[in-house]
Amino acid sequence: MKTTAVRLYGKDDLRLESFELPPLKDDQILARVVSDSICMSSYKAAKQGADHKRVPDDVHLCPTIIGHEFSGVLVEVGKKWRHRFKTGDKFSIQPALNYKGSLDAPGYSYPHTGGNATYIIIPDEVMEMDCLLPYKGEAFFHASLSEPMSCVIGAFHASYHTRSGTYVHEMGIREGGAMAVLAGAGPMGLGAIDYIIHCDRSPRLLVVTDIDEARLQRAAAIHTVEEARKNNVELLYVNTGNLADPVNSLRELTGGNGYDDVFVYAPVREVVEMADNILGFDGCLNFFAGPTSPHFKAEINFYQVHYAFTHLVGTSGGNTNDMREALDLMAKGRINPAAMVTHIGGLDAVIDTTMRLPEIPGGKKLIYTGISLPLTSIDDFEQLGRRDPCFKKLHKILKENEFIWSAEAEKFLLDHARPVDGRFTGC
Image: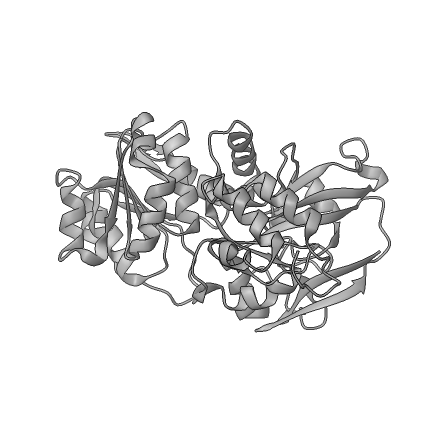
């Protein structure tokens, strides 16, 4: 079976190549990838190469397929796994395998398994660790987004507080408390707001900050104050760039008591230190955004650590249960991470998109691996539609859905776009 994939060879060395996959073993599964959403973690792997904790030292000799937020269809199931899976099943994958203590993960570490490919071979350990997850939904992109949503969910479960007068840690955010999400109007922040409002353990007050007014306005239009209020959450959007004294202004919103939970969604020293300074008694600072530099540091007030019991946690990805929760909430219609998606592209857009990801505005960049399409902003569909009937139709579909990517848009694109092995000249 021939596949076309984006492979990592080392620092700043991604290549789009076609090659033969090896014969399928009895304990493996052959799959067709349909969608993959590009994550900042892929950018970090591409920049760090073998220095990345999940990338093999010999990646220059045995390149790996990048992309770990993917979904598709099972094509052939090896004998060992036919009692659990069958040809035609839709799937999603939890990349954090934790197999025998290893950090190896699909999308970083494997030569034949990753999201930016047309066909892949799923190795035995993915199934052994129960990380190949059946997906019953209609749209493939929802399954792709279940992985980033699992990261959001995992971070919420990892936060903790101490039971008054004891040393017992109670896991999770403080229900009915005050929460702040700093730098929270980006794609992952949108997912977090959606989850916070609609999950079973919500705060009383949620303050979302950013310094980008356009991102804040988009977030406020997607996740409205009214919707939050229906779920007993007071939601406030704050542009800290407009505040003379952001720390005191944010603390005042809590009556001066500070926040029970503060999530940091940008690896910026000033943001981390702001988060520390707005914590209340027994406040938990959750450092969500992973930095690129291994030397990233910020100051923490240890007087508060000692006397106010403030503390710090961090997570890198979610686990399988977090991903199952994401899929379940999407299936029930309680969350809709489609709002995270702002750009669409084909497999041939992956290299440029990955390498320039920090500088490309907007939210999630969603890739359909079987098609050829330059990375295109949803906002540009109307203009492109003046000369291309495909984009005209896509714009119409999105206009009827409040300009949010949808199952209908996905189906139309997959039915009409050029295959990745052909040159894109319009749908």
